[in-house]
Amino acid sequence: MASIALLLALPVACAGPEAEKAIFVALETTSVKAQQSDGQFDTSTTSEPKPSDQNANQETETAPTTEAVTPSITTTTFETRPWTLLAGGDVLLDRTEPEGIDPFDKVEPGLDSAEVAIVNLEMAITERGEPYDKEFVFRAPGSAALTLAGAGIDVVSIANNHILDYGPEGLSDTISVLDEVGILRPGAGSNNAQAYAPRVMTLGNGVRIAFVAATAVVPGGFAATAERPGVADAKWAVPRVLAAVRAAAASNDVVVVSVHWGIERETCPNQDQRDLAAELIEAGASLILGHHPHVLQPIETFDRTVIAYSLGNFAWHPRYGITGDTGVLEITFDGPYIEGYRFHPHVLDYRGGATPILSGERYDRIVDVIEGRCEQHDPEPPTTTEVLGDPALDETPSTTTG
Image (cartoon, rainbow, N blue to C red):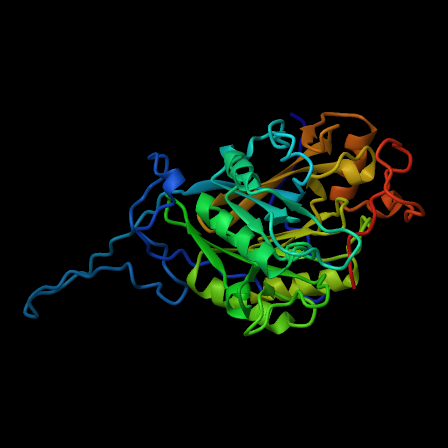
């Protein structure tokens, strides 16, 4: 299928303050991800040398001091460790799940084809709790967790402005059911220590991946505290988010940061997004995945870090215009290093599920936005309530609560 591809031979600098290069260190480990124990990876404990340990792999034979000794140097050869991550944007199953619809069944490549698949969960999974006092509150029944897992999704960010739509009970239920199906869920928890904590996955090839999630869209009472459940706050507590990324980078090979940010329906990232991206890269982020604007935004690279400012609506209510433009971001790794990425354009179908497209005006628009030609595609702000059937309007009401 048609796609937009980039190999990271010639990195594109991300605008904003210059950040230091993220340093990746492959750590020694014997743990494996259960789903990847099919023998396709090298599961040995051989690790790559740290920059400070250049002589660690040099073994010198010892001989009696009465004889001349010629040191023998043994060079260690490391196996390549290729793997793939697939990422989608905002996921809302409040309509599809009660109707028994799988909105991921047309996605290409299939989410279960990669070692890691990650999306943003823009709802609570619960049937309990009181709705938060705002215009839009979202939830789906417990079976939604099985739909996510069945699609091959391994990680969901729960740092956003809807995860507490049904209060602490809704958040608790969401965490419990995701844990039951084995989906990692960074970004929120029963207190701030849990909310900011990196969630770690070890692949069958020995690569350790840490996931950190935070939101810069924080309704009142959503931020976690020492005694209150909530989300990791990337609006008022950026230093703590950066500390979590640094801690993750210190003991893992790859750090994926999922961040809820930006302005709804704007196809270009704003300066706040760019500034935070630069700080996250400096802290050690390998990959930054953004969401919240409900439209696609550009994908940029800085050194070996890929920044997807917004991946749009991935499973949502039906959309027939720009808020229905979406896609799958495919990142190719070799061990801890990003080798390149490929973006697979999709649009939402009549069910609200992502469906691949190969050509046409919408395909061209997706290419424009992803490659940075975004200004010309900003839609007009909505002036009425939600309209599903008019492609010219395609209005998505704001879901932000101040």
